[in-house]
Amino acid sequence: PGRAGVVAHVKGFYANVSDIQSKVHEIVGGGDQVMAHWSFTGRHTGPWLGRAPTGEMISADVFSFFTLKDGLISRYRLWMCVEMRERVIFDSTKAMAEKQGS
Image (cartoon, rainbow, N blue to C red):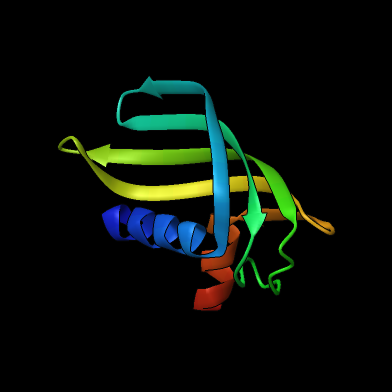
């Protein structure tokens, strides 16, 4: 959750995917909610999303969702469809629920 969730996501991403090229397609906000649609390509160089590194190029469409409180991120979620050796759909809300056993 919050800033810690964003920091963990970014650190894990950059530690395991190199040669990253990213593009922001759209940012939409209203009230205390912001959504960013972006995409990336990169090289899968470290264990990521439960998969061993392949050294191959991967790509993804990503939707990042931010909830703000007092101008700061209070909640961060993302959904992404990653094209690797097999297509991987990652939903951080679902992953957190599974991790917490609910």
